Image 1 (cartoon, rainbow, N blue to C red):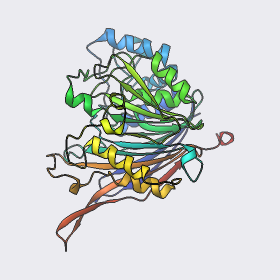
Image 2: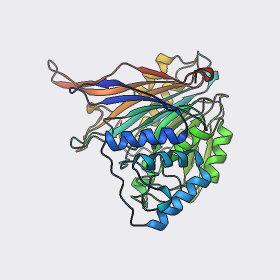
Image 3: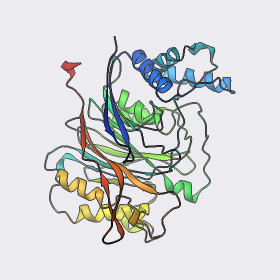
Length: 389
């Protein structure tokens, strides 16, 4: 029988975010059914028959063969909508609509480089703030203890309740996604703008959390699966408890894969393809904007390089704060504002994550200028020990 608990972490009409924490323990079918009920009853997400029945059927077949854990959740979602999975008329592999155009900056610090002796991933998520429909204003922290697959904590939004932005599992495998803006801006890309057959740019994150304990297992899982992107190409930063890490990337044509090993050094990633540059000297200088992905990479690189000793959690947080996207980060602000909406810090050994959320811009009345934005304190979430679930 499903065990379910929900709590509101953050909610105020004065601030940008409403954050909910869900804990679910049960079979994957039961977990899927509950998430389907939330999508249907809380978010009023409708599931209508698809026009492409062949693709819907093939996607269902693909997930049943290659990701049976998620397929069981799909069965539960279908039951929440009083539908029959085998009729192949409704696609239950997605809940809601994705609107993906994230920025982001992340750093992996191996255990040998931290005072704790733990591997740490520090990650900023930057996103647009459209006033009409703030796509990331109601994220979920999903803590799952399924009957099959590893327990995990993941951060989800876009009302998808199934496509993880990032997360950590009970074995310590930690995965974060970052947009590949370089391919999007320099080359012709071909997003599907709809579901297809295989793993979309976010479903691969949850698959790794559900099924992989180590970096080597994650490499294999990524290589043997079929991938596509609905909105934009991405790349992934992945690390495990033993201190291994790598970045997973695609070529701009999405026809080749690249694995960039961490080699026991801090691994930095923003929104350009690392495999295209042999060293920091090769990274282009195309703008003097602080928000430029090349400049954010350089800022993180130099801050870490100049720190000639092991890093503390305070250093980790302060370093990522150097590249927070603020109102005053721009010389020419975009028409739709962009902010660093969340900063998450993963302690791989402790299987935990701390998350701070953007609340609002801070205007200094006396100086008549915007200063660093007001952010929430860090909320900590930890996976329970095995003998407690």
